[in-house]
Each structure stands twice: as C-alpha cells, then as structure tokens.
Length: 349
Image 1: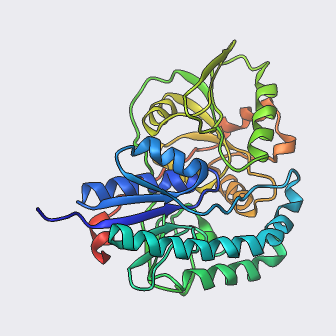
Image 2 (image 1 turned 45 degrees about the vertical axis):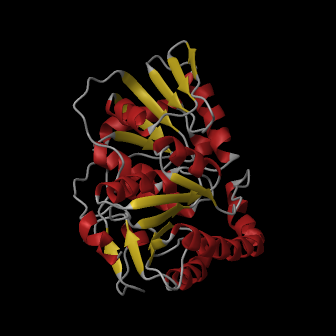
Image 3 (image 1 turned 180 degrees about the vertical axis):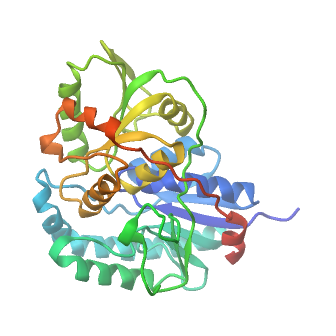
C-alpha cells in the first residue's frame, strides 16, 4: 500500500481567522490523497482539533500576541514584543526540523507563521498582506514582511488576482516578491437556501482584551434590541455552552458546520472586519456591519474600503450604537463566487 504524503499545515494563533481559513485547505489535502499534520498553539490548535479530531496535532511555540486596551498603543506593543517574537521564530524553526524528521513530512503550508519552513522541503507562506499597513511605519512593516516571505518557496494569497477582489492594495503588488498564486476567496462555508431564523448574528473572534471589550459593549447595546439575536462569543472551550437571555441566544463557540448553518439562517452579521470573516461572508452573500479592532490598521482599511464600495457599513468600536444597524439596509452586502484549483496548487508536493 502506497503511503500518503504528509503535509504540515500551521496557522498562526492570532484570533481564529488564520486557523479557520486553513480548514478548506486541510480538507482539500485530504480529498487529494495527502495526510495533513496540523501544528499550531492556543485556541487555533484547539479549534482545528475539534474540526479534524482524527488527524495528528502538534503544538508549536506560542507568540503570545495580545492587544493593548487602547488601540493607539497596539503598534508600540508589537514593537516592544519584537525580540520575543523573533525568539519564538527560531524556536519554531527547530520544532519544524523535529517534525519533518519524525513524520517524514514532504511539504509545508504556513499561514503567517514566520518560522514554519524548511530549506529542503517545499514551503508555502499564506498571507493576504503583501503590503502591511501600519500608518507612518507602513514602509518598514511591509519591507520586514517581504523579508519573511522571501524565505519561502511560494506565496499563496486567499483572494482573486484581478481588479475585482476583496483585499485591495493589501493583497496585490505590481511586482511579486516570490512566485505568488491567488487561491480565490476561499472559505470553509457554502451558501445554503435556508429560512432566516435570526434577525441578527454577532460573530466575535480575535485576541484579548479587545474581544471581551467588544463582547461586553454589544451585549449592553443589544439588551434593548427588539429582535431575535444569535451571539457567538468566539471562545474555544472544552465544552460548548449555550445561554439564553430573553431575545439573545449565546454560544461560547460553534463548529464549522454549526456556523455555516447559523450564518445562512441570519439576516445580518455583526463582526470584526478580519479578512477571513470578509472571505466567509462574501462566499455566503451576507449583509453585515463591521467593527474593526481598534489599532489594527488592516481591519480599519478593509472596513473603510468595503464601506466606500457601498458593500458594508462600519464604525469605530467606541462609537457603536445599536441604531447604527439601520444603515445596513442602504448597503449591497458581500458576494463573491470563485473556484480554487487545489490539484494544481498541491502539485508542488
């Protein structure tokens, strides 16, 4: 019997977006006859354990990325943490060497993990940030990211290549740094023709303490909202918990299948403007309201860009009021159809 080729798939543990957008890639690897090995840390690893319990899971060194309570200090916190992040990257490189030897891995797919690569094995870097927006330091942050990307064999961008795309200037360069392939707007979800049950769905994720700060604000605002609400906190815990508060049903987390159904059954979605969320909602053709994470320039750019295009309204976290949801009816919503040729992508392995 011929052994299935083993591919290491390693998403960054920064919110849930990196791990969730790896789900369709992991499933495609299985469908194409590969044997994925999943490696990450924290909630990203816990989520993928729940999605693929039969696969091998390995823990990687943690970057321990958190946000400051005030968005304006986020950039300075990242700079302050830079020495620790570089140390973690070196630890990752060593851990990957061990995993390659232990499992006879023949290919690596890293979603934004700088140290998950190997000089003797095809190594892919997934990112939608070919330009890293950071205000006055955009030139520096972009150049730093390019230096990371150059250490890989290929770069995969989860977006369309042409002018009609979702990431704007984030995911498109006039001159690619290394061989770059566009996956299309991949998503773990599929659109279903289901009856609308929820007037509003809140879908949270992202690093602390900002996730909790938005959660508390929204629960306060929704206490006087006369509509049926599904509230998913985005907290990965050992057991799924469900709580009901009058018109609001609260989950700590949902699996991909549960989320797919719930999103299809919801009229409007309130969430961060993280890029993976944008991909998911575009695949499902949803109307939404975006509240970007304070200080995260990428999310702020995406939210404003999509608002400018007349697709999704947005506002700052500190300014959100429940009446802002009335603006959604004046926007088109998200929609994007495309197919990904995984067979061609995986031919590198």
